Image (cartoon, rainbow, N blue to C red; front, side):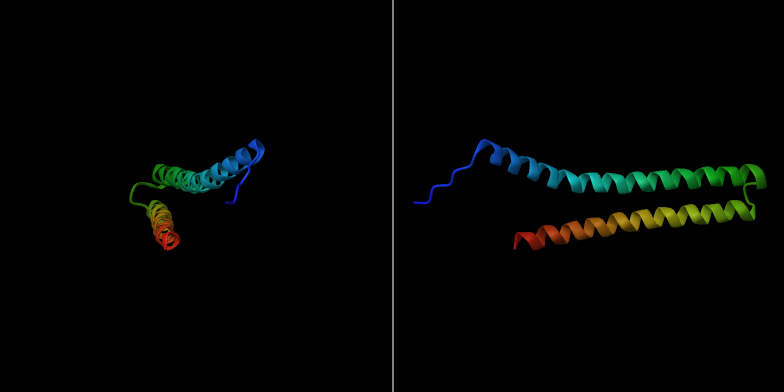
Length: 95
């Protein structure tokens, strides 16, 4: 019979390592979303400024709307890709 012995320090180290490994992925996801939120808020302010200075249907306001829509799509695509990759990795790791 094989007997494994672990010191308290080793067990705590393993537990902390697992905790940090699992929490790191969540932190990265939150940072990505926060980054998107900041960019979207900035583009929304730019759109508001363009409307105030040039009018609601101006060329400048329409360009800001297009940029805001591109940003929304880019953030949504990144979220979909990340979710797809996580789904694939989950099932790949189970096999």
